[in-house]
Image (cartoon, rainbow, N blue to C red):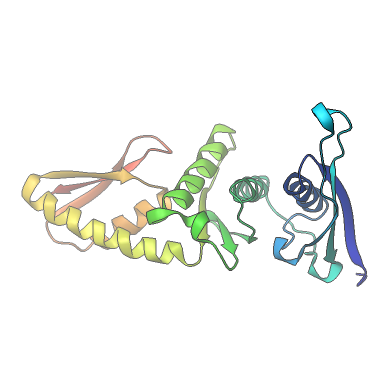
Length: 223
């Protein structure tokens, strides 16, 4: 691979739109490109003439060293779909991040890396959970046979989420002993498995899953 920088020139009504167009073109050329490696040169700021006459678009050049361009990937259709969705959402909310995708027998793991991921995670994980929910809903709506769960992670959020789920599971088990039955919030199969395993040895309760994907949930009952 050459060490010469990769360059694209794009236009837009504003500098921001021109930069976004450049990133999209680079992503199309090299899926999985680390956006943090892209440098921009603003050629023109863009301006509107009097009464809208004489409009001049903003022009930018985006430059990235080819050493930062990832090697071609061998991804399944669902993994590529998940990557594209997360990239589009992250870009849409203004988060520049590196996106790595790993696929195993149970799930597709989309991991976002970067310096500032708080906006992507959101308060109490609401944003990243919504992104994960959307990725799973899109996969199943597309009718992909044997579609796997999609797990979207950033800055170790899912490890913290696991701890939260295990605590939630124990509290639900304690309530079930008193009330007979407790229904938890909808979860992915990966998250439901965490709950099932945590309560497998909890005395006096049993767990099952009810509902249809992507709104399937765990039920904890007293035995």
